[in-house]
Amino acid sequence: MTLSKKTEQVLAVLEQAVRDYAPVTFANSLGAEDMVLTDLIARHQPEISMFSLDTGRLPQETYDLMQEVRERYEAPLQIYFPDSTLVEKFVAQRGVNGFYDSIENRKHCCHIRKVEPLKRALAGKRAWITGMRREQAVTRNGLEVFAYDADYGLQKFNPLLEWTNAEVWEYIKEFDVPYNALHDRFYPSIGCAPCTRAIAVGEDIRAGRWWWEDPANKECGLHVGKAIPLRNSLSA
Image (tube, rainbow, N blue to C red):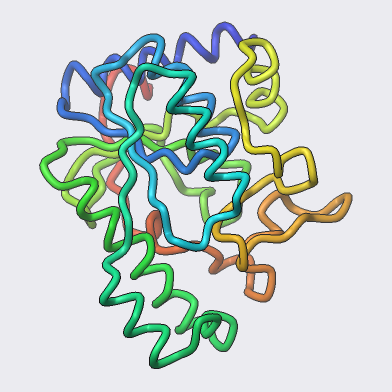
C-alpha cells in the first residue's frame, strides 16, 4: 500500500473520531510517529486538541522540539506536569534515581510523572488518539485501531497502528516534519533521559527504553489496560 493511501486511512480515522466522539484529544509524546500525527492533525483536523506530558526528566532535545512545534504549527500543544508533592515524596523515600532499584520503583515513578497527569489531560474528553504502532513492541501486538479504553472510560484510536518505521520516516521526509534530534543519534524511542539510551545495530527499536527490564513488561502504564475492540466501518 502506498504512503498516500495509508495517509488517507489515517485521515479517515481522525475524521471519524471527531465526528462521533468529540471532544477528542491527542496524547503527543513527540516521538517520530507522533510528529506524523501532529502534522496531520494540525493541517487537517485542528478540532483535535494536543497535549504532551512533561515528566521533569526529559532530554533537552525533547524540549527543543516542543518549542519548534509551538513555532511551526498554529495548533497549541498543552503541557501537563506531575504533581510536585508526589514527586517530592517519591524522591524523599526512594532517591532521585530510585527508579533504577526495582521495577516497582520504576513503575511508581512512571505513575507519578505520566499516568496521573494523563488522567488530568483526558478529563472531559470522549476519545483520545495515540501514535502507537504494532511494530514497536511485543506489548503492542494485541492493539486495535479502534477500541474502548475501559481504564479511562473513553474511546481510543491508534491510527498509525499498521505503519512501519520506514513509512513513518518517509512521511517525515516528504513533508519536512520536525523531529527530535536524538533520532539521528540512534534513539528510535525516546522517553525520560535517565531511562532512555541509544541502541546498537540490530537491536529492537524499543531496546533503549528501560533497557534493564524484560521486554514483555516494558510499558510506563499509559497503555497497559484492557481495550475492547470497536465495531465500525473503517476497521472492517
